Length: 529
Image (cartoon, rainbow, N blue to C red):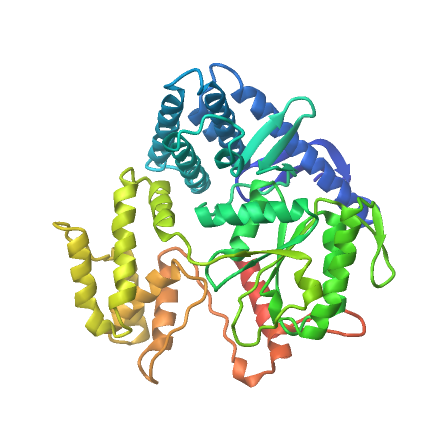
């Protein structure tokens, strides 16, 4: 942005700057110039994608060098468009050529091994995310084609092929089309960067089909199932596949119909997807009004209106690319049964047990393991045996766990993680604090460190005087000494009310006031930046 309030470049945290096709003047009403900026950003990203498409359509095109040069989002699209093109070419020629399917399958396997090999190189943080994401997507693509070969599919009109997410660049209208079954989406060109993608399993494939059919029928979609089955993440991931911005709202019994109405109007005008997490936590009277609000918006879309009158009398413009999704945990305490007039506006899809073996296999492949199929089988058996045989008693379970590992991985000696640099810093910080570096306490510190690397929220439990606060404080100072600055922000939730902790919405003015927790959270995010 220059001194004349002229925007010409969008800078991304993913090490890719998007040069706008033409500058946007940031003057006048903010909602107008921001809308212009969004339109120009989408057109500019489309230009980058279009140029990339013409480059990888060249006969002497080399994919791996291209992926190092291209923005992550464009590289992911490239591998999906190329896979769709090559697969359909093979399927069309399969009746005349007996070996084309096997040849194409081998080509996809070689590409997968090339991508896996890249993850073993010395990559930057963002290159590593990009190649891990590419492996995650291409493992699924290769598995799909391998299944087509095994089932002797010989035509592009077979449902086994049609049910997949297929990506095309339409030269006539210069747009990317994404097809799932008989539903066609236009890629929305949102500047999403190169983010992690979900491992695609048969469960997520089924969910994609239901979500796509729901949107085609001008309905909402409602994935339902226990916590941790990937309901919200699947909606978000499908949005990424379609170049779509997905906004997730965590619902609670504090939400009222006015707040929901404002969200629905915003989604309808912006064309974004809204995912309402744990929607059945909202109070029943509010759900009844929400049913009427959703009905008005979905009917306006069905009738292809450009504008519609909302329940509060506002005249709202309509972008037909919007989508409304709700996720539910049935049977939990404090959850409502949805009213019938709300149920009929959504297509439901049951999300049950995740396909762990596939997830493990893809994750192993994405970090460079070529022998990922066998390793995934072993880890799957290990997790299953742990669930069946281990209790919560750590002292009793440790020998059993170690014997399970030695049975599954015979002849391999387990190295204990020593963390030499961290332990040196811990020894120094313990001495400064005047404490004793007791080995069982030090083990808890290492366990807390390892847990913090894979979890967002942590709890330390134990009786008074067992060293819970000290282990947090010493680990924090030790990590700071190792060059990763850490700060502590402390609060006592028992001394304040819930609105004082989280914040409150003024019912008369609709102004939001942050609580102590939200204020501390914002401060910590700013300090990290």
